[in-house]
Length: 149
Image (cartoon, rainbow, N blue to C red; front, top):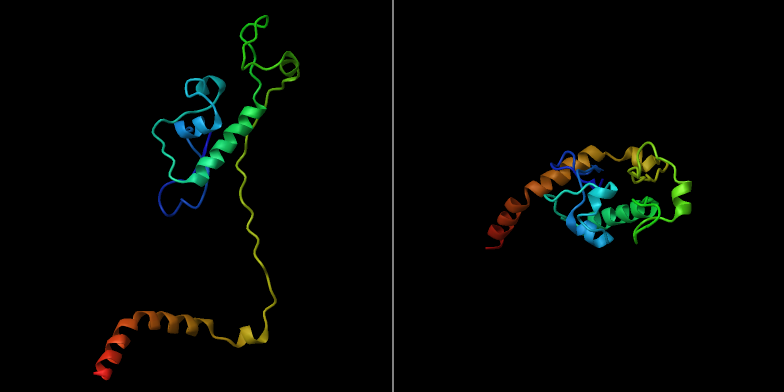
């Protein structure tokens, strides 16, 4: 299943498993739309790709799945073009758990020692001053223009 960003501001920073891959993602990965459900790939015809990053991420996910996939031939005597070799089929093991888990990005926060200057500084007052300056920009500009006239 694809990785998608949920709707709404509250949740769209997170990533979750979606319903199915788009036609564009399947095409980029070189998988036929009709073949996909038969080899365990979910397809969602309603989904659209809004960003190139998520498209590439899901295409990479599909390619990774395709590399791990072992397709058993329907007839062992007559294997078709896309089927796996007999050695791969004999060495195959059933996977349990998530096939390709979601990799969460690691955020590294640079820590530093608090200095005496930092302790002396009043950050709250600085923020209040910046907020009031931003709010009063128009009035001050108007007063400066009136003063010049």
